[in-house]
Length: 308
Image (cartoon, rainbow, N blue to C red):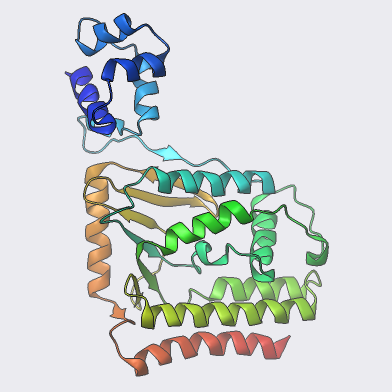
């Protein structure tokens, strides 16, 4: 029964291509051996079934009968800049394996400013990488920001940013979303690792980023921003599509548990939709409420700028 279900899922993935040819090539077995498996005369080994499921991005949760148990994936740990480059590439592969062309909506619970926005060739982006590396690597030696020179991530990060911004995006923010980056700037300035001129440039770039997001809220019909005043946000990312969804649950600053279990994804969609009912839409609230929200963020930035 399980083999039939696995073969059915593979057929959905390959369309008109030959099932026997596909399995023969992936498992590196003869055409006849593949045919015996597709005709159910022979069973897949455990390793073969896992290899096929991994290759075709087929969730094994559907083969587990217990609603309280399901399989998840975990992104690789990030402890140095090379790992961070792999993280960006893996995120690109996540996008490539999702049905982005039609009907995809990304929900982002923004405890911090979504990292997609700081994937750019700016001092702000470089500072975020500097902070990530110091926080994630226990062996990291704290060096002045001026001496920090990460490798160029530009091709991967720009592609990742473009893919994110091309989707229908729903972001939930509150007054605390900006707090994390401001605390980081303040901390590294107070310790002398970030110079005053550098800090002021980063704050100016942060102001420009907030203005950009405000403009998106006003002018981009695919972007929806909500102010959530009731619930602590969590940096959860939910990729919702009627055919294939994915829930990215933070395990640490740059580690995610990836869940594609249909029942869990359905519950996650319901949770986001319920939150949104208790949020204020900054797209439709009118200029006064929208300006009030963004002015509070600019005021926090300006207050730190005056204290540096």
